[in-house]
Length: 330
Image 1 (tube, rainbow, N blue to C red):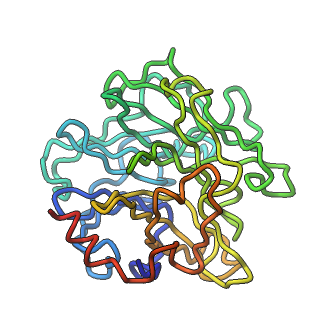
Image 2: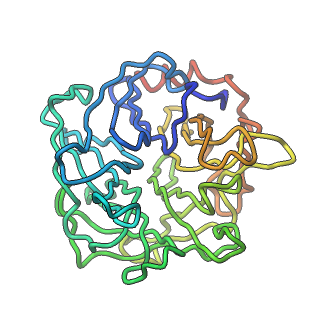
């Protein structure tokens, strides 16, 4: 893959979902949720666009982050976080949209469901959902329950009784930011956020974002599912080195984070994430990019991949794009 920006607009928290040969893209726009569609995962310069929801009249305010599009048993859902009017970012909770249409681009089909039920009424962002052995789970980033200090974000996992209802008795913490590379501000804060489940070629796990999203040291970490019961924290093994990061000595882009994945038919996975052009861009200039990763990149002993090269062993920029796109469409 080229690892070039897929469009000349900021796309923080990109989420890509492949369905019937089309790549559907959502990302943080702050005051609304749009879905973009393209038949080329590396080119969203002239996509089809659909504005599917604004918070007007919903009881929730702008401050809409990280929407994710999912098709669950034939029904389209969008999971995202929003804040309560006048209460600011600390009021973020996981919210849901559901569509009555088979076409996710049909704005008339989308309805606001409300907050995900069965989880603590506590700060939560970046929810994602996935199946493991026919059971539906939700993983999200949140403050430790009862802690409002905004100094730590953990990853929580809960089983869902339905796409809109969690089973509260199953809630567990599966990751805390214990490594130095997960902790910004000289280690005073710890951040695990932006979880995304990945399963391909005997790899099963959760890729998450670590460190400060406002820094060039933002990176992707890896939790491998090594046990049988996802609700047992001991079933998850955190790799001691990141999966993907930037290297100042190699130049930009910088601070890869908030990834989503599309498996290919040749045993690899396409990884979409956002990065900045410059070291000190902060939350500005975050463009979405795509690179390919192999199963060996997810090995517990593998070296961290660098987003500055736009390639991994066995891959060169643009070398396999046509093959991958064709394989997904078959």
